Amino acid sequence: MNPILAAGPAALIGFALGWLSAYLTERLQPPEDTQAIGGRSRLVRDPYVQGGLAMVWAAIPVLQSAASPTSWLEAGLLAVPLVQVTVTDFRTRYVYGVVAAVGLALGLALGWHYHAVPWWWSLVGAAGGALAFGGLYGIGRLIYRGGEPMARGDITIAAMVGAESAACAAQALVLGVLLGGVLALIVLVTSRSRRAFMPYGPGLCLGGLVTLFTC
Image (cartoon, rainbow, N blue to C red):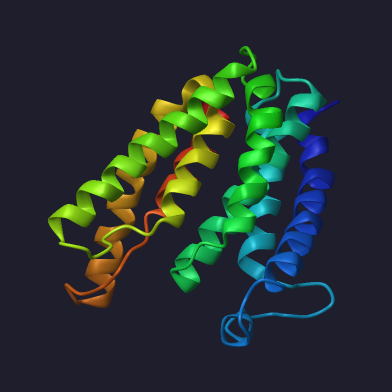
């Protein structure tokens, strides 16, 4: 299949999956969070989720032209929870455990196959992500004496990214931390406040998305 010709239909599939993902996620959100979503209609449920997935799905066959359509499908499915969590966490500063758990399950089921490594690599990636960020969470609690500088949901996101990245988990997590720092700097500059809060989730998920194309 010609990658350029496949990009158009792939974008439409990504847009439709974004609609479904946004619709299901809305079932978990309180009314005030749902009302903050712009463009809610029969066609556009969440423009950021649907637009993001449309772009990712269109990019997959172009950037991975040598891969099989099966690999394109696996990459597209793995991208769905990454984009959804990125948008939701950035918008609400809250991680819905069910969404991250679905991403973790997809990672355990497809991540190792997509990256062409033994199945247990996804387990190692998930465990490594959870342990690394669980350790950071514990250290943060000690430093801030009972406070939570990191949300517990970030541990689940790290496990999800690790499972989806399989043998590339370390690369995805390190890149996610770096991208999180860049996003935090942007938020700090644009908000002009040192009290601005930037969640870890978007950076981690973006690290996972980049790893889908580079590892």
